[in-house]
Image (cartoon, rainbow, N blue to C red; front, side):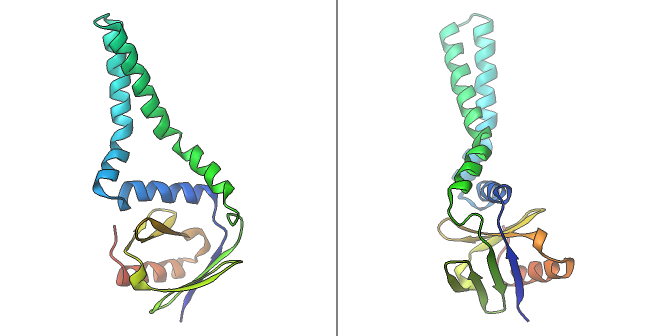
Length: 167
């Protein structure tokens, strides 16, 4: 018997999915850059403060402070940018319906009905609130757990484990 989900995606779920992609599903180089951004920015910021504060090289210290602040601010403001981006999608407030079976996934929205085999997906990731399916090269299918009963949640998790590798 197929498992069905019907939901409207939220901006927070969209943001969390992008974070999951950056942490777990992106290429190793992209993951490194994502994870190193804040520590590198903070290092430059603090190093610049020390260099400028000790008056070793005030110009270099100021430059390091500015670059470190920019790097850190860019990464930490990413969630707000993604929420604004999500609001611009014309279908962001429309219901989506997914039907999962042994042979594949059926997705329906107000505009389209698409059926895909499991081979279309590379792998999946799971967070406390979501399942995220990866479709190459950068397609992400977002499945919020909030719409599933505990038994349906277990059934979907088991189906995903059988059909896809986990990240």
